[in-house]
Amino acid sequence: PAEELKDGLVTIPTIKADNVVAESNGGKNQSTVSITVVGASGDLAKKKIFPALFALYYEGCLPEHFTIFGYARSKMTDAELRDMVSRTLTCRIDKRANCNEKMEEFLKRCFYHSGQYDSQEHFVALDKKLKEHEGGRLSNRLFYLSIPPNIFVDAVKCASSSASSVNGWTRVIVEKPFGRDSKTSAALTKSLKQYLEEDQIFRSVLRFSNLIFEPLWSRQYIRNVQFIFSEDFGTEGRGGYFDNYGIIRDIMQNHLLQILALFAMETPVSLDAEDIRNEKVKVLRSMRPIQLEDVVIGQYKGQTTGGVTYPGYTDDKTVPKDSLTPTFAAAALFIDNARWDGVPFLMKAGKALNTRSAEIRVQFRHVPGNLYNRNSGTDLDQTTNELVIRVQPDEAIYLKINNKVPGLGMRLDRSNLNLLYSARYSKEIPDAYERLLLDAIEGERRLFIRSDELNAAWALFTPLLKEIEEKKTIPEFYPYGSRGPVGAHYLAAKHKVQWG
Ligand code: NDP
Image 1 (tube, rainbow, N blue to C red):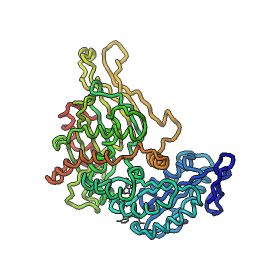
Image 2: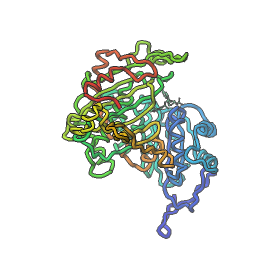
Image 3: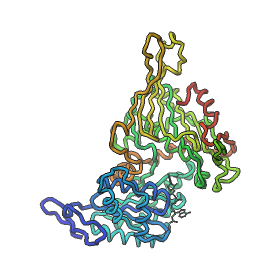
């Protein structure tokens, strides 16, 4: 199709199809991106992916010309897909009057194609539709695999089969879990690489991935670091997937470990994805093997408070009655390098706890020979500074500092120097999925996991998981809505620290 150079500008014919919004700038944009949400009928697609795509569209972050296709086995018409999607779109980012109008425009760019995940033929039919919408532009394609992991490889095989007929890039976002251990993860990587190059695979590790730290940290000043992820709800009837994996695989081995690596890495040569990832891999490879005695696992049990009964994990109908799967875990990890020698990195992740939060707590060393401590008899723990980086529920960074209480006495008090993002910045903080999709479209790999990182992450956790599973270690039970098993406190105390 005719792309010609006129006065130095590439022009393209404006598309005739009336369900595609014609280009408003006279057709100067030469490329298009087609985003296919594979598994569009599912929960993640509805709750996260479509709303994130709408937010990106609203913010003007998608290219002028783009098309979104939902793909799944369920039968649906375009109108039905739009109806489903419209129910989860919100105007949260901007309440201006034209939000509804924007929603309508966005929905007009959403289409649906029904097919099997392992059918080349069905993907060829999808390819045909995508081509119609691409209208001869330089076509880039993004496939978001929002499907159960056992069908990843089939879908990648089929989705990538049309890549050679596309003249731009083809990229695939794969959701975790990336295997259950080193072996299955390596097998998945091997299968994916049959069909895709490493630079086409975007492995999503979400939730925490918005943060990148300037690592001006070391054992000299930092006494310990804590990575905490807690949810105040259980599996609520959706424990089938979870029971196969458990909290260590679901949260620790990927989300928390990624953050730890970003936190502890040396300053990268540049902020380029590859440089950052090189440093992360070094951290992961310097980590000491995790010992079972440095790990506490727990499982929540039912609890009745104030006349309300909260179900235990094994009360979930999708979970086997005798399941030993941990819904809580705490661990102490160590990085054996010059910067971090001897500093405990504590991780804690759990479901059905008393709060919902995701945060990093950096506890600083005591001031040597602290005068206040001597004079006031205040407990040592009271006099350390703590930096808290909170990711959920309200993004904030605050530093707990020690003040002398005004007056004649010599008492110390702790107060917070607080930066609550939403108070300081009126702009809505983008959802992690928005960042993720935008980065995949722009080919920015900083937030995605590379296969050698993934191998290093599994190498660290696989022996531990194997030991827990072979020994059939019984998790410590904790009541729904509590602070978790007491064992976690003993674990911290063993390393002479307290949970923040
Ligand atoms: P769903 O279980 O809702 O599955 C998505 C779609 O896949 C379904 O609508 C269904 O579509 C199809 N599907 C489901 N089971 C099968 C099967 N056994 N064989 C073939 N197709 C099947 O998953 P989610 O949307 O919750 O999650 C998608 C992916 O994202 C998963 O890999 C999950 O682990 C991961 N994930 C999910 C999160 C969440 O919050 N939900 C968070 C983080 C990761 P149809 O029948 O129409 O083909």
